[in-house]
Length: 202
Image 1 (cartoon, rainbow, N blue to C red):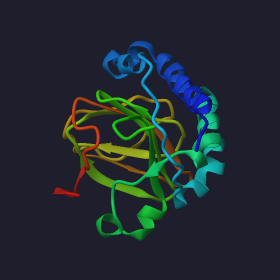
Image 2 (tube, helix red, strand yellow; image 1 turned 180 degrees about the vertical axis):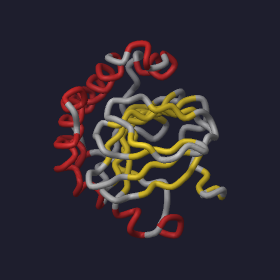
Image 3 (cartoon, helix red, strand yellow; image 1 turned 135 degrees about the vertical axis):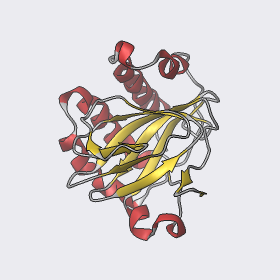
Image 4 (tube, rainbow, N blue to C red; image 1 turned 60 degrees about the vertical axis):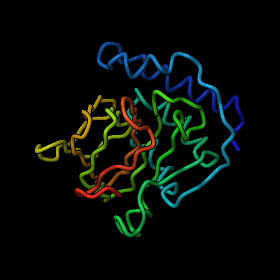
């Protein structure tokens, strides 16, 4: 189990990183993190996707490298989760996918108004179209992944770019040679909702 001081250090690093975006990041996603949320003890839970972490730091630009390095150091002692099953997307996808909720209803820090955490996708992985009621922001912390929203085609998004998904707007991501590590923020909907995938609630 991660020591409380290390977890608080990671939360502080996330707050500093988000604060660096200024007006580019809506205040409604940042303000809930300013009041220190209470921590909850969660046992470490590891997933196969953690094997991609050694290459994540190399794919992070200077702006996010400090946050990524701190996260990668703590990642094996965090509580990793998966939304889907092999029946939903196949065993190969599960082998390359996972997330950590740092703040939220299930996170290392408790919050009923915001969820914040990290998504990890291995190389050559498609996270297909899905949507959910919550409003969402992603900030890629590594370079090279492509993103799609609504009817738009896939396009590469740079690291440290703010990507906004309005409620119930379908979106998808896919990686190339490098894995993707992204910071996510959810608000304004059920924070533990399972996404609707391929038109079917999964």
